[in-house]
Amino acid sequence: MGRPDFSPRGGGGGFRGGRGGDRGGGGFRGGRGGGDRGGGGGGFRGGRGGFGGDRGGRGGFGDRGGRGGFRGSPRGGDRGGRGSPRGGRGGRGGARGGMKGGKQVVVEPHRHEGVFIVKGKEDALATKNMVVGESVYGEKRVSVEDGGSSVEYRVWNPFRSKLAASMMGGLDSIHIKPGTKLLYLGAASGTTVSHCSDLVGPEGLVYAVEFSHRSGRDLLNVAKKRPNIIPIVEDARHPHKYRMLVVFAGEVNKLKEEKFKPREQVTLEPYERDHAVVVAEYRANVRFLFDSCTAVKAGCLSLISFAGLKMTKELIQSVQTYGRKKSATAVALCKKGRGLIKINGRALEHMTPEILRVKLQEPVLILGQKRFADVDIRVRVSGGGNVAQIYACRQAIAKSIVAYYQKYVDEQSKKELKDQLLSYDRNLLVADPRRCEPKKFGGAGARARYQKSYR
Image 1 (spheres, helix red, strand yellow):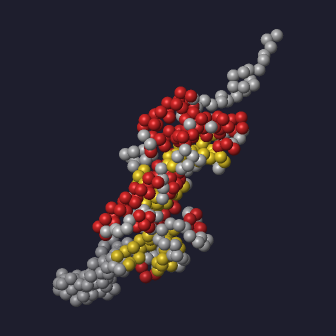
Image 2 (tube, helix red, strand yellow):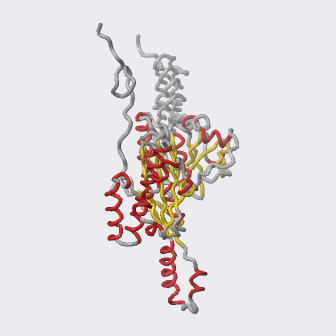
Image 3 (tube, one colour):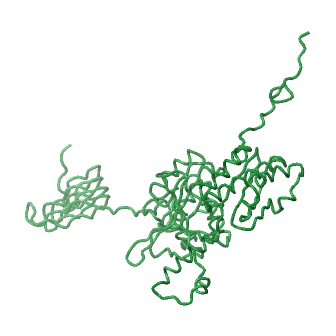
């Protein structure tokens, strides 16, 4: 089949349009035109404009615009109008189908410090993201322009976090704010912990305890990007396993008894295990100082305050010791006094059972009442039976008087007391490690067996 003749309308359609006359043909790719007006490309991809005539052909309307024709002269002069530009890209969807930022979203502070409300089509809780551009559990992120800079917030899902659900339910106070040191038990994979990390900020700390090793791995990955999270993969029911992170109540009570106010604690991990440095504040009795001094110069005020501190601490001379027998534990506090000895608030001479009262008085009878004339000893005992408690108390009393003489009297007197007590009964100073052996089946006791007949 030959090439079509030039006609007033040009060639017909097809996959590639024919070569036409006055106007080019259509088709998937427009044909080349001729004559007075160059052929315009039709179809999916526009064709090239014609060569003859005074005007180049128009480009196509499809996905990619065709090239324009040439203008004037038998072979074309200047280039004609260009085809339509390439089709524009489709609009970008929202991040994970989340809320759009900018003018359409308003972020307001919540009544809980560090928490925000994102107001869009639906209101939601959010925290300021510490790690910009990172999500922890696939949560939505919202960026808002604030003073020329972009601030990113993480939407807090109440269906994934019980703390967020409690705030949505109207919880009065969460006791978490910027700078807080938080112990979080049951941290799981770090969903709520990550938002707590945003809440406390760089100045705060989150101690996250999780028992499961699988969840603990996810928690470790979260903590790698958030330096204020300290992951602890331990059982939350056994705090003694992570006790190095907590100030013991007994140590705090000791400081308070001596009029100290604990202010700061720093753990010595990894240099020292199970150790911490506690910084406490002590205020001297200024009225006592000024009553004892007739005149005080301004330059000597700090020196006198320090002297008052030393004098006040010398008035509180005390030691604390422990006594144990089986499952009974006694704690004795020995301090400067007037010879008073009490056990659970009762005087020594009123303790029961009477047959064991002498056993309780043995430290006093061995060392003499003069040794106890200048001290007060108060004992608290719990656990075990009556006999075990008596033995635990006598040991605590004996150890307390030895410790007091070592700390506040002299080493020679302490050695004399210790030798006297050890020569009488070693168990006055050393705990008895013996325990009752458990009963076994097949017999009446730990070793005894039931009788057996062979005939």
